[in-house]
Each structure stands twice: as structure tokens, then as C-alpha cells.
Amino acid sequence: TDTTVTKTAVKIGFLNPLTGPLEPDAPGFTWAANEAITDLNAASSTHTYELVEVDSACDGTPAAAGAQTLIDSGVVAVAGAACSGASMGANAVLSAAGIPMISYASTNPGLSDATAYPLFYRIVPSDAIQGPAGADMMADGGVTNGSLAILHMTNDYGSGLADSIKAAWEEDGHVLCGAGMQGYEDTATDFSALAQSIVDNTDCTAVYLSSYITDAALILEALADAGYEGAVFGGDGPAGIGLYEKLTNNTTATNVT
Image (tube, one colour):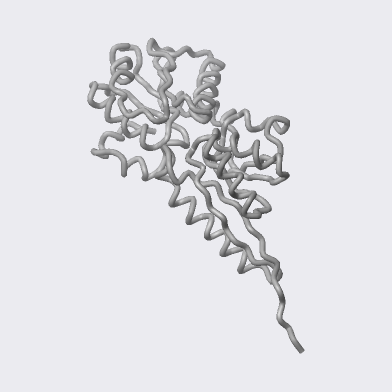
């Protein structure tokens, strides 16, 4: 008796920031995606799963182009994107083709709008949740009313998280210090002016970074060069050992939470 089973091939798309400001995290994302495909194939006797990876570049325009490439490749669903702006750009293309996407890292609160972003799902919480958690973290860390500054990227992730942090901080009855909340492009590499503005406002003894890893490292070094000795806090963006890999001197992260 012939017991050969013909398996059905299934292609899963994968939007990964192989280039751009989140590039340091891309190898870990690739590893995880390949492990998932291995597990799916091991568990199925009827299907063969294949990963189709494209670069989302942490930006809506290339992510949209990558999404079209995935559609042309015949994927039935997409994992990603990582950056919120990339997910927004890709969703317009994927949802129009009826293809669902599940992000592993996009946290912008706006993505919770199912009308604006149909067929979008995520396995991470919205920054509408991370904001109050961040405010509680800083209060527990001794940050007092009028002593906090917020530095943030002006992309969809950075702005969304910064707004959530500020709203939660003010809801708790606090105000920001003299430096307030300041934004910068996610491609910026010179943070000396931002760091100096923190130091010049002597009431600013704590800084919250709504950042990724590379820019966080540069900001920490600029703050150190400017003589800043206060505390620094951050969310998921700069977290992990990748921060140490970008710092010239790891002791620069001594007061970072």
C-alpha cells in the first residue's frame, strides 16, 4: 500500500528591519522566525511551511514595497512588521489583498483602530499600557514632580510612546522639567544640543528615552559628555544587551533603568 502523503505548501511572510535604526535586533528576529517555521513543520503531517523574509527597513514606504513582494510570492499571512510605522505602511497593502498580519513588536496605540488598520494583530501591548507603567517605574525610582524630561524619536513608535508617557505622568499630577519633551529624527547621530539642554535646565534630574538602541547609546554618551549625572529611564526600545554593544564605555549605562 502506498502511504506517501503529499503535503500542502504554505508560505508565511516575514517583515524584518534588516536595515534602518532597528537593524541591531534583526538577527534575533530572523532566528525566532526560523525556529517557528521549524516547529510548524515538525508538528504538521499535512503541510510544509516556508518563510519568505523581506526588509521592512523600519519605515512605511519600504515596508509597503516589501508587503507587495510578499503578496507576489504567494504568502497567506505575514509576521511583522517590527516598527510601528512599517506596520502601518505594510497594512495598507496587505489588508487590501485580504492578508492578515501579526506584529511581534509594533506598539503604537493607533494600531488598535481596527477600522484604520484592518486585519492587523499584535502579540505585544499597546504603548497606551506602557505609558502608565513607565510613569509608575519612574515614580518608584524616585523621580519627583518637575524633574523629568522626555527625549523621543519623531517616528510613529517614538512619538506614540512619548505621548503616552507624558500623559500618564501628567495624569499622576506631575509636570515636566524645564527641558520638557523634545523630539529628534530616528536617523539623528548628533545629540550634543539635546544633552546640553538637559544640563542647562538644572531642574532636570531624570530623562526618559523613547528610543531604539543605537540612538539611546549616542544620547547616553552625549549626556555623559555634557556632565549629566541624573537618572535615565527607557521602555522596550533600548532594552537588552544590544545597548552595551553600541556603547563605547558600558559604565555610561550605570544609572539607566
